[in-house]
Image (cartoon, rainbow, N blue to C red; front, side, top):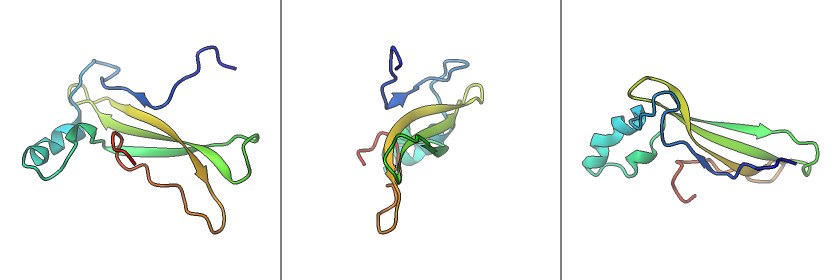
Length: 108
């Protein structure tokens, strides 16, 4: 057992290399946000990744899913993780697939 378990969700508001807070996707949507054509430009990201974590002790047809959201620093160009969250994915015949992660910061 871990001494200090990690508590999800995790947020990384600054670039781990230069400490910058300006991001490519956020800046790209800023004008759209200012004109009222989109909400939440601060939650914009370039891409997300979903990984199923295999655990032989979990119930059959269920797995832990880790969803990570990435963007690039506008100051130094480093691509880094902005947000990470976990969900339980249930797979099987006749069951709905896991819900899309959508946009972090939203209340899905």
